[in-house]
Amino acid sequence: MNKFYLFTFLLAIVSCSKPEEPISVQEDPMISAKKDTFVDFLHYYEQFFKANFNPSGCPGAALVIVKDSTVVYKKGFGVKEIHTQDSVDVNTVFRIASLSKGVTAILAGTLVDREELQWDQLVKESVAQFNLRDTQQANRIEVNHLLSHTTGLYQYTHTKLIHRGMSLGNIIPRFRYAGVIAKEGVDYEYQNAAFSIIEKVFEAQTTKNFDELIKERLFIPAGMQNASSTYDAITQNNNVALPHSFNQYSKKYKKTSIHRNYYNVAAAGGVNASISDMGEYLKVLLGNRPDIISKQTLASVFNPFICTSLEESYVNNWDGVTDSYYAKGWRILDYRGRRIVYHGGNVNQYKSELLVDPENSIAICVLFNAPNRFNPVVIPTFLNYYDYYKSIVDD
Image 1: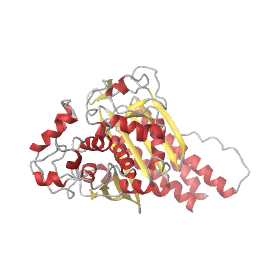
Image 2: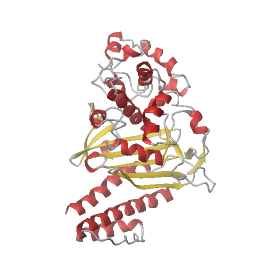
Image 3: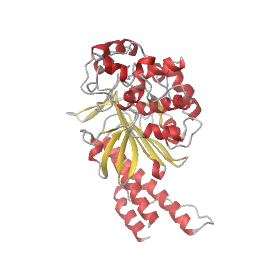
C-alpha cells in the first residue's frame, strides 16, 4: 500500500481536505482496500475538477462517471446563467454538440440489429436525390462512409448552408455540385451536412423521422428522460444551462442565446441532454443494454474504419496516445496498450467530452455551457488518474 500513500500525497495538491472515512463492513480486507481506493480515485478526480473549474470562470458544468453498469458519480457545477444563483443540477439540459454523432451511430446500430439497415448499404438506394459532381462515386457511397467521414468530399462541405438555416431536405440536392478530393473510404475529412444525410436514410428505412426514431429506439428505452433533438424541445424546457461566450480582451463571460444552427442537421449536432441522461447513455455504450443495441453491433460501431493518426487533431497529442482512428460516429484511440472510445463536441458555445474505456468498463461524460481552457484536459487527466488507481490495485 506504499504506492497508495504516494498517490494520495501527490493528488492532495488539489485539495487539503481528506475523503470521508468509508463505512466499515465485514468483508475480505483486500476487497475492502480496493473499494476504498476507488472511492479515493473518485474523490481526487472531483477535487481536480473543482480546483480547475472554479477559477476557470466557466458558468456551468455537469459530470457523470459510470463503472460497469452503475453510475458512481453524478453532479452539477456552477450556474445555468451567469450573475444568478440558479445552480446546474443533474437534470439540467445542455446541447451535447458533436456527441450527437455517436448517438446517431448507436441509433443506426439499432436499425442494423433489426435488419432495417446494413452498414454497407448504398446511400442512393434510400436517398435518390443524393448526388455528387462525380456521379459514379455518389453511386458507391455507403452508410459506412457517411458515419466515418470518408465520403471523399472536402472537409465541412456545405457547413455554410447549415449556418444559413437551410433544411437538410434542401441541402442534400446541393451535393450534386460538390467536388471530391479522394475516392470514398480512403480519406478522412470531417463533415456535418454529409454525415446528416443518414437521417434521410433512416427515414426511408423506417418511415419515421429522426426525432421520432431516436426517442423510440434510444431515449425512451434507455431512460433518457430529458433528452431531445429539436430546438423547440430545449427552448421549452425550464431547466436549461444557457450558453455563454468568452471575451478574450475583457476576460469575461457573457450570456448568449440558444440558436437553431445544427438542429437542421440534428444527427450531427442537434441532440440535447442532461448529465443524468448521459449517465444512462454511458451504460448503453458500455454494453450493458443489449435490449437497445447488441454487443456485436456495438463492437461494429466502435470498429476503426480509417486511421487519423496523421491528422492535425488534439487527441494525437495526448500523453499515451500512439494511434487514432475514426469509426462510426466515434474516435478510437490506441492508448497505453488498449483501445478507448472518445468524442468531443462544440456548438453554440457549449462544450462536451465523452470517453469510454471498454477494457476497464468505465466511462465519463462532461458538459459545459461555455468555452474554457479547462475543457481539453478533463479526459486526459481522468485517464491518468484512473491508470494510477489501477496500478495501485493491480500491485
